[in-house]
Picture (cartoon, rainbow, N blue to C red):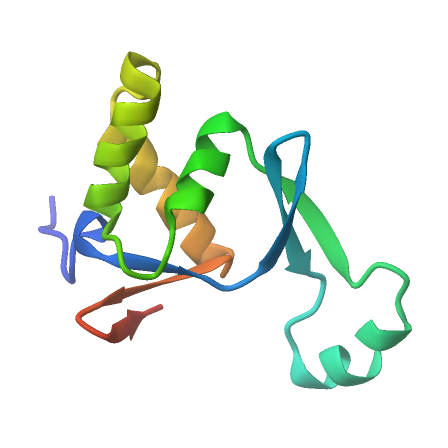
Length: 118
């Protein structure tokens, strides 16, 4: 088994990268259909819906609301646990997976000490 390299996600600071709206008190992320600069510039403006919606559940909405570009994932986890109690256990395992998924899809970026991690 290899030892993980790089920083632990729990120590990192998430920053939002996509727009969002609220529907029935839940966050809906507006993920762009294209990321290529040429497609974004010439095709997306002609599309009726240049984004696809990603609906977050109750816990995902809470996490999204807590992402402010200043709090670490660890701090967000403590606040999530304070708001939702035992329903979110194991909070840091679940939160780590969720934050990694958001980062992989480029809905957020993760940084540590001012440096961005891809």
